Length: 278
Image 1 (cartoon, rainbow, N blue to C red):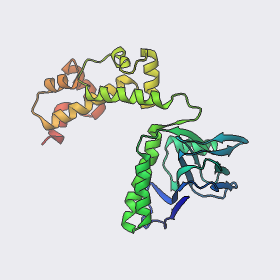
Image 2 (image 1 turned 180 degrees about the vertical axis):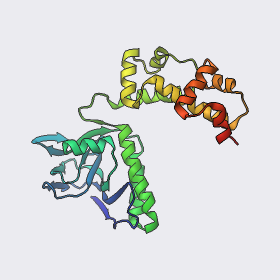
Image 3 (image 1 turned 60 degrees about the horizontal axis):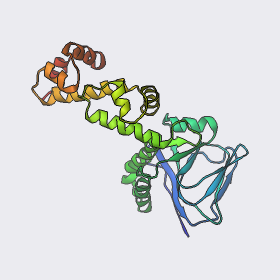
Image 4 (image 1 turned 180 degrees about the horizontal axis):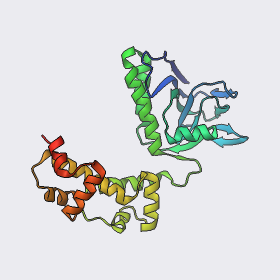
């Protein structure tokens, strides 16, 4: 049996965007079970299950919680959950405070409980392990890192989790993000919606819909953003002409590049180079 937990003092700096209050790691601990009334816990409560089985009760429903699943309760919510007696959890958890307007936190606030699957290979274990190490030998100078690690965990889940009854499974999210990485790395190519869709094997219609859900923007908007980022780097780090920069960044016409650049950056490429170039 392993039952490790830490309680952290209120941080000396009061302006962290998020901060852990208590955290722990339980393995082979079948007695792990909680039942808290409405208003009892004044912090968010996040649990990630890396092995074993357990359950959460929510609005009269018993929700199985096994490997690769997690739950997030908001402040003050009624909570009832526990480990399976014969196959106890390997669970990592943290109670924390934050005012961040992240969608998963807003979902938990609105439904009084957010239940999800998460990507076991997204590095969450190592983030928790570092928080554990800092908590075990707590020093006030560790506070910024503890806050940063918690923030990284929340953003990681934002990208690598999906509601239990979600519309876009994790494997599809991975496929879309892999396509986005290729587009970013090769943004100078003459991409079309059809050629971008082929990267993930979906039809143009489905790719457009899925890309908008996963990446928060259309494929063409994402491509333009990547091209503009490359153009800005070329402007400040090379002596290429504006027309050459436009070509290398993937814009077919210099005049169109100048128009798009000014719309997005508020000044034309030459002025951007003068302002930020070495």
